Amino acid sequence: MEIRVFQQGFNYSQDGPGNRLVYHLSGCNLCCPWCSNPEGLDMDGGMAYTVDELVRSALSCRMMFFDGGGVTLTGGEVTVQLDAVKELLTGLKAGGVHTALETNGVNARLPELFALTDYLIMDCKHYDTQKHRAVTGASNRLTHENIALAVAADKHPAVRIPLIGTFNAAPEDAEGFAGLFVRLGMNSDNSSVELLPYHEFGREKYEKLSLPYTMTEQARIPSEMLRSFTETLRAAGLNVIHT
Image 1 (cartoon, rainbow, N blue to C red):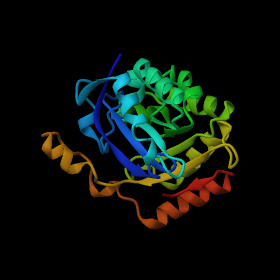
Image 2 (spheres, helix red, strand yellow; image 1 turned 90 degrees about the vertical axis):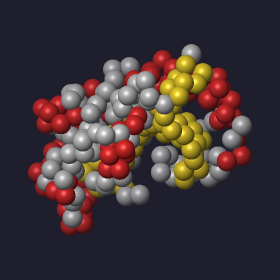
Image 3 (cartoon, helix red, strand yellow; image 1 turned 180 degrees about the vertical axis):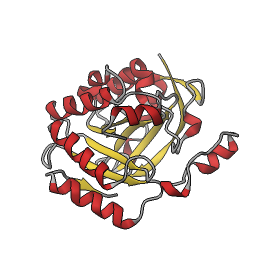
Image 4 (cartoon, rainbow, N blue to C red; image 1 turned 180 degrees about the horizontal axis):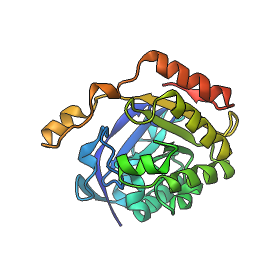
């Protein structure tokens, strides 16, 4: 089976524990205007590999997986290529490789990957379905359901919120996220929440691809807002981390 990858390389403790080989898979089912990897939105982008090729490549890098490292699959959105991802994770696990998966959760079949994933990272961009759909182009209902399923399955999901000043970073948004996470069964023992303030890492990529970059300075959040957001979530019994 083939799988399309638009970028690959190592990083340390950014996409899972330890030193990790990260495969960025092509294709996405959302259209977030702040996306830092617009080159990965197109399903036909990147290069096609066989799953066996990627497994062999990963296994040849074993000596690099120090401090609990391994392989992370991210995107784009990995579940766009779910069948190939399932086969890839199966091969990696058979080879004894620690696996991590980063996903937006907008796929009903995501739980099929839980047993093959050692470290699960899930984006949660908004607590409100209508606002999420208006900005990203799709509902977040499945994301919320999949977070609850991951918690129930003892996957200890690392839930990430990209904090965008014009979208989801107001005080009432902090209360909205806190209420959502509590309803989904999250607490400081079974999950974590990572806050990711808006950045412009993708701006130059948009320019190179001749794509419009619509984000403005209003998307940035001040440090006080980040601190207040953190306090609200921790007051709700959630484990908030910053990396």
